[in-house]
Length: 212
Image (cartoon, rainbow, N blue to C red; front, side, top):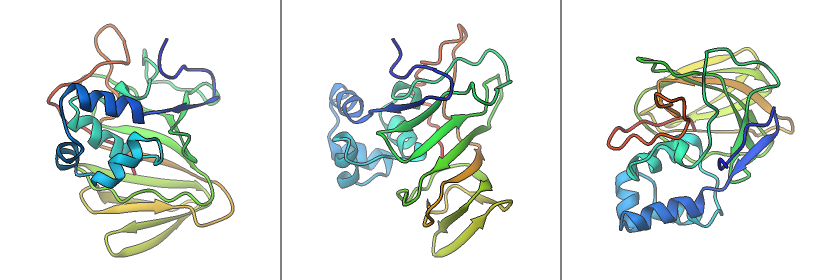
């Protein structure tokens, strides 16, 4: 059985700490080595491994890359037979019961470079600071998102969009009392299916990551 099952819009919570620790041990890596390779602090990695912190997809992707696996090693992704996704039928998932929920919009085909998600952010959520290769664009559907890019703070409201390079240190938060819903897209590979349609393929040595 997959680590998370596709079940309509039921939210699937993936516990990643034990999987990260087991993979790290299998590679005989210390936390220091993993931190150096992923760019994630040792203290934060320790919290993630104990399921005391909920990494964003971009941070999880950096960890996965350092561990020579894809993000789908930790989170099940639905197989993509075509490019159409329907409202109410997409898999919704979170990481470590995080108050941020994701719905995958993109599909995979040879040469594709975009990843895209509908993201719902509960009140009070604050992401860790991330930076990575590629670029991102967000479009806010509901609510007010507070976005920090390096030393600048911007509130992105309903109908607003923002496009930026992922290598600029960034984080986001919901400082309001209501959910924030947005569409995020970026040139950050998250899930890649193999030729037989399986969503569980690890790409050793090919680094790719996704959003804060």
